[in-house]
Image (cartoon, rainbow, N blue to C red; front, side, top):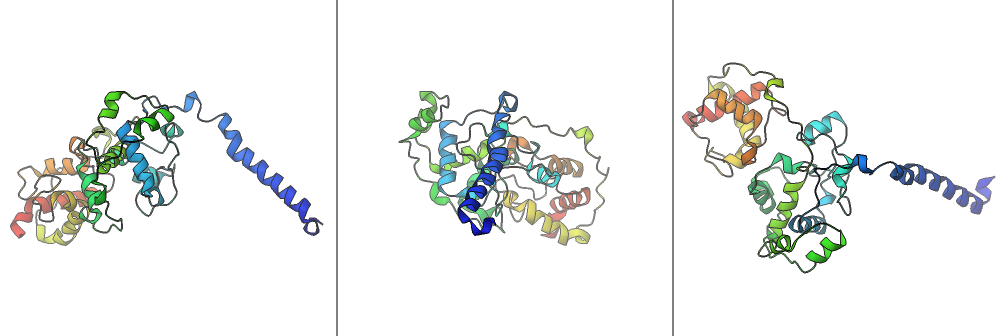
Length: 295
């Protein structure tokens, strides 16, 4: 009996574990990460992005945030941001990978697609004071990252990772802060991959007319929707903040509906068509248009 001979039992257990490891962990590398898996659009990190990635690891951000969109339909819808599920070719330049499995905070694999603002205004405010944009967040403040960026090992790291860089790339690090580096890294996540965006024609057509002409009838829900999705960027009283002021907007109901549904990519505003149905979108429009009368 094996249980009476621990030495043989340990040896056989080791053999079984190694066979399983070889089949599931070692052998697959023979047919993955080949030329066919690579994504031409995925580029190496710039020195600033690499510094931001190192700070991200230093601060333990991957303990709360994963960076992989699973193939589940709900996962793709929630975290894909038009980029689909995660592909192996996206991580060819990651040393080490930061896929993670814990989602105390949201997955960040496509965060650069969700907030494409070239100035990173949303990220900057969120990092400095998370609750100023996400009231329910339990994320600590990282305002201390507004400190000069140390570039002592920047060139050495780029050479070690064999990333292409120029002296001009390294010179761009001068005068940067750790916050600048972190935001540069976050803004890159998911943006290299080809994104298949839904065309307007494929989206269900909204109602021709706003069905909510009386704010009082929908105010409670409309106000809650605004506070949850809009207030962090447009202000609690629609007075403007990261985004423009909305109080007494001169835009028509249909124009506002389209802006909220599709978003404004150039300004970093995400679209809400995938997360809010037409009824909720119209309630937001009503609150924005008629809220001034009720203030």
